[in-house]
Length: 61
Image 1 (cartoon, rainbow, N blue to C red):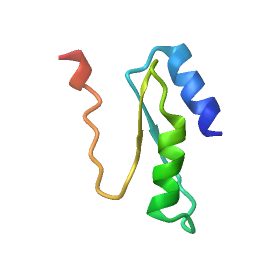
Image 2 (cartoon, rainbow, N blue to C red):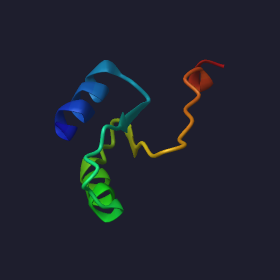
Image 3 (tube, rainbow, N blue to C red):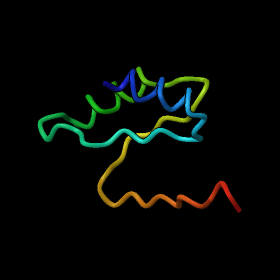
């Protein structure tokens, strides 16, 4: 679940949790609502989207 993914990210000390594998039937507004509900002060939470590019080494420079 989203809650589990965010909690695991906090526990693991990651910088960002990226929510992906969205149901194709979900609207952008539904994904925005899920993302809003998933916000956590312990970790940045973002929703993946087509064309998103992540620099996995950015935090290590």
